Structures are given as C-alpha cells and as structure tokens.
Amino acid sequence: MIEPAPRTAATATATATAAGRSRRGGRVRFRPAMLLAPCLGAGSLLCVAAAGWFAAEEARLDLLERARSGLTLSSAALSGQIEKQRLLPLALSRDAELAGLLRTPDRGLAARLDARLEALAAEAQASVLYVVGADGITVASSNAGTPQSFVGASYRFRRYFAEAMAKGRALQYALGTVSRRPGLYLSQRVDAPAGPLGTVVVKVEFDDLEARWREAGFLAFVSDASGTVLATSVPAWRFGVLSPVDAEQAADIRDDLQNPDAPLRPLPLAAEPGGLWRVGAGKAVPAGLYVEAAGAIPGAPGDWRLHVFLPAGPALARAAANARLIAGLVLVAAGLLAALVVRRRRALRQRQETLSAMNAELETRVAERTRALRHANEALTGEIAGRRGAEARVQNLRDELAQANRLSLLGQIAAGVAHEINQPLAAIRTYAENAGRFLGLGRAEPAAENLASIVALTGRVAAITDTLKSFSRRATGPVEPVRLGEALDGALSLLAGRIDGSGIAIERADPGDLRVSASRIRLEQILVNLLQNALDALAGRPDPRIVVTVEARAETVVVTVADNGPGLSPEIERTLFMPFVTTKEKGLGLGLVICGEIAREFGGSLALAPGRGPGAAFALTLRRAP
Ligand code: ADP
Image (tube, rainbow, N blue to C red; front, side):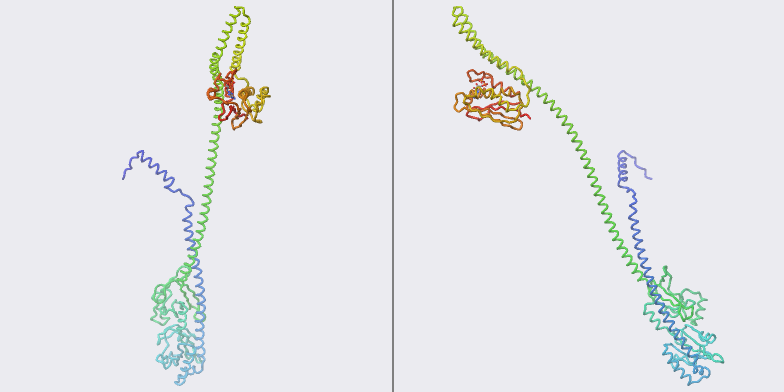
C-alpha cells in the first residue's frame, strides 16, 4: 500500500486550488439540460427506427395484398383447370361406346376409343385420359400406341381406381407409374345396372401453371392435409413437407401418395415475426424474407391449400431505408432549425446580458461621476471659502501695506519737508534777526518789511504742512462702484474757472454708465491734479488742447489725460512720482506722488503713458466695477 505523502502547506494550497478549480470548472455541475442531448439523440434514433418499421409494415401489407390477389388468381386458375378436367371423366362415364367396350372387350372398338380419348385429351389439354376395367386393367388410353401406352397396364393398386370403384369418384396427386411425372388423377366410375364396369381416369399435369407461377415471380405450391407439397413452382420442393414428420408419419404419407420415393424433406421455411417467412439458403429459391397468402382451393379436396409466397426482403429493406432516410433528413432539418432557433435565442440573451451589463456599468460610472462631482463641488466650496478668507487676509495685508507704504513715504516726505522747511526757517531767522536789529536801531520800516517777509515765508511753510496733513490722514470714504462720467464732470466743473476763457480746448470722452472701483472725491482729486498739470503745461502754448480718453477693458478701465504741451524732460521723467520733484515755481512736487498712492489704494495705478508725443499723457488705470 502506498503511504500518502505528508501534507505540507504548499501541497495543501495546491490541493485547495485544485479543489476550487474542480468545483468551478473541473467537475461539471449537473444541469437538467445536459440530459437533453442524449434524450434527443435517443428520440431521433427511435423516430428513425419507427419510421423504418412503419414503412416496412406498410410495404409488407402491400406485398401481402399482392400475394392475396396472386393467390386468388392462381387459385381460380387451378380450380378452373381441375373443374374442367373433372368434366371429362364424368362425361365419358356415361358414354355408351365406352361402357360397351368395358362390357365386352373389342379390338376395333378399343382402337376407336383410343383415338377419341387422344383427341379429347389433346383438346382438353389433359395429360392422359384412359379407361380402366373393373379388374384394374386399362382397356383404352389416349396414349395407346405410344411407348408409354397404359393399355394393358393394371392400376388396381392405385387409390384413385379403388376409391372411384368404391365411392363413384376419386382424386389423387401422384407420380405416373410409367412417366414418373407428377400429376392429378381424377377418376369417375362407369356404372351399369349390373354394377360398376370400370373407371375413366384423366391425369392433369400442372406444368404450365407452375411455369406461369414462376414467371409471375411467385413461389407457389399446393399442400395437402398432411402438409405435403404437391403441385409447386419449385420442383425441388415437390413432396416436401411443411413441418418435419417422423418415420411413421412419413410411411403413412408415402403410402397415401403411393410414392415410396417421396423425400418428405421439410421445406426451408421458418416463420418470422410480423407474419413473414424466411426462406433458408438453398439452390431452389433465393433465400430471404417472403410474405405468404394461403387459402383453400375451390373444387379441390377441402384440405388442400394453395400457398403463394412473394419475396419481401428487398422491398421491405428498400421501403424501410427510404423511410429512415426521409425521417433522418426531416430530423436533421428539424435539428438544424432548432439549433438555429436556440442560437438566435442565445444570441438574443447574450445581447440582453451585454446591454444590461453596459447599463449597470453606465449606472456605476454615473454614480462615480456624481460622487466625484460632489467631492469636487465640496472641494470647490471649501476652496472658495479659503480664497475668500485669503482675499480678506490679502485685503487686510494690502491695507496694512498701504498704510506702511504711506508711512514710509511720509518718512521720505518728512526728510524732504525738513529740507524744504530748513530754508524758510533759516530765512525767517535772518529776517527776524534783521527785524530785531532794525527795531533796535529804531528803524521801523525795514523791520516791518523783514516781518512781512517772515509772514510770507510762514505762508509757504503752512502750505507744505497743509498738504502733508491731508495726505497723512488715512483714506476716507469706502472704495465702491463710482460712475466715471460723474467723476470726470465733477473734476472739470471744479476747474471750470481756470478753463473758461483760457482758450484751451478740452476733448473728453463720454464713458456713459461705465463704473469703476474708487471713492468719488479722491477720484476727482486725481483727475483735478492731472488736468491742472496739463493746464499748467499749456500756459502760453499755441493751440492748446487737452484730450481725455476712456478705454474700457474686461477687468479695467484706463483714463488717459493727454495734452499738447512741452512734455517732460528725460530728467523729470526719471524722477517723476518722487516727492518734491517739480519744475514749477510754486509747485510742491507732491501731486503725482499722492495721486499715484490714491490710485494704488483703488487697486489701480497711475503712470506716464508712453509714446504720446508731443505733449505729456498720464494713464490712470482703475478696476472696472460691475
Ligand atoms: P507740482 O505740480 O507741484 O510740480 P506734480 O507732482 O503735480 O507737482 O508735478 C511734478 C512735475 O511734473 C511738475 O513740476 C512738472 O514739471 C511735471 N509735470 C507734471 N505734469 C506735467 C505736464 N502735463 N506737462 C509737463 N510737465 C508736467
């Protein structure tokens, strides 16, 4: 016995995998549909076999019908011949000449009768016609004068003679004692008032009839009560028996037939199922299956039967084969049709499955997308909140930066102021000292002049401090949407006094409803400053002109104030927007610095617009407000 190998972890896994595979694929799960194919196969075979059987049965019945009609015809022919021949001895038994010969033998009469019998036999197609005396000796015969002549022969031992003498008539199928040819002997007693005179016998041979049976393709024979074959289309079967007989029966039959040589061999016939007979192999007839029709023969002894056999094997086989072929073809066609239907249904089911799978996938994808969108939306909302927070922080930072910027600018300005104020302060000091000195000298007038100069100088210092005061104040008024047109109108109306009568042409754009992010007052302040600078630059210039244009962009609005004045020297251009840079006698050089700062607070900018010669042009960029 082989010991099983110890199970390691690896083998255990392999076994488990194999088991899983066998569960899923290796061992096929039983399904009722699996029985369908063998059932259909068996059913088809059954159908084909049944078709063959029915067709064979139909063919057998046809053949049987033909055999029966053959039987009827053959039986009629046989009985017709017997009836016809029977009349001969009957008629002759009443013949006076014949009776006379039997009563008194006479050579001449015998010769005449022989001739008559010969003529009659020929006419009636009888084999032999003869007259036997009461002692069994033939007295006249149709074959008298021939080597086979019956005349003088004794037939006392013949049954047809003895029986006819006893009963009046007799009938016997036997072999001719002389000719050894089989035939039916019909005998009729010749009666006279004194008693029976003898018998008239006619022998009928059935050669022609047997030949006709053979020609018709029949296998026919006549059997008697003992089952012995008499007349037959198969000479080899003559004196055969339908079923085996023992020796005693055989002796009886041979005795009855008066034929000691009768073979009495059983015919090679065996009953087959379905009313068929099988003829065994032999030289006499073709072996195979036969149908049989059998019946009594009218006019023949009651226990005689005529059997007609028709070959059935090939016809039955052909009919069965044809039927099987047709059934097979029909089944194949039906099978193909069924396969087609099944295939179409399967394809339909697969398409439906695919569609539902696609549908399910689509739904899954839609759900996934929806989920992703929701997440994205949430993320976006979060981001927007973050941005808002960041913007707020940026705005705060920007405010703080602007303030820091302003303070740092203030630092610069403070330094400038210190420098600017130093001069007037030094002058004031000088003027004050001079005034003191003049007052000491009692010269009031020059002292007053010096004091007046001091007052003038303090005015200048006051102007500087005023501007700075206004600038250092934290921006007032919220930044909000402001109509640009209104601010422009305001600035121009503030300057109307200067413009009117100055001869300076003002071209201004109409911004319509355009709005910008600004504070109205401070925006006007910027515009006034720019327009004032332009007006200053145009003083004494020929054909003076100021052009104010407005360019609205997607996010911004650019207001340009241009003039055709002398423009800016490169030096001024470099230092522009720096505090206290001025070319004007009474200028402070703070306007542009402050305006630039205000523009930045609005989220915009102020810059020199490039390439706008011959004069100067300043571009104020503002954020566009909704
Ligand atoms: P202020 O007007 O007090 O001088 P600003 O800052 O407004 O101070 O101007 C600074 C200088 O810029 C001016 O002195 C002038 O030289 C120059 N400037 C400004 N605008 C113009 C202009 N439109 N044309 C020529 N020069 C100009």
